[in-house]
Length: 115
Length: 115
Picture (spheres, rainbow over the protein chains, first blue to last red):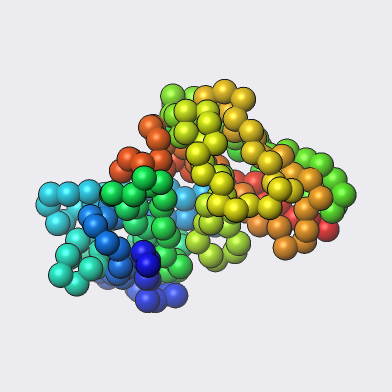
C-alpha cells in the first residue's frame, strides 16, 4: 500500500538552530513528493516539491528538502529556525503513474521553535 | 489573484439544517478539491472536480453534496449532518487535472460545528 510516514508528532528546536522534520514514503513507481505547512486556523501552504532531477530541493521561507531514494526519505530542513516557523508540517506524496493523482498526506509534525 | 477564497469562515448548524459552503478561485485553475480536516490531523480528500466534472468521490456520505457551477466556483451542500461531521473543510485548486505534479492552492477553510 502507498503510504507516507512522519515519525515525530512534535519537533522542538531553539531559534537559530538547524531544524529537521522527517518524512519517509512507501510507494511503487516514481513518487512526486511535497511539503506543506499549516499555520493555526489557516489552510495548507505549499513549501516545496520533488519531481525529478536534483535531489536537493529548495523552497519557500528558506526551507529545503533532500530526496533520498535508497532510504525512501524526503526530510525537510532549515539551517536556522525562526519562532515564526512554528506550525504544523505535512509531507505528502502523489503517485506519478496513478490515474487519480491522489495526494497522500503524512500524519503531520508540529514544529515548535522556542526563542 | 493567487487566492482561494472560502465562505463562510465559521458555521454552526443543527442536525436538521441545510447549509452550503462556497469556494472561489480566479486563477484559471481547472481542478478543484474538497478536503475535511480534524484538528491536528491530515486533510482527508472528499471530492475532486476536474474540468467541472466530478472525477473523484471518496465514498463520502450523501449528506454532503458537491456542486461545480463553473470553473471558478465550487460549492458543498450540507444536509442532515451529524456532530462527527464537525471539522475544518478546506477547498483547494490546481492548474490542470489531479493527475499532474502541480501543487495545490488551499483556502483558509470553513470551521464547521454541528450541534
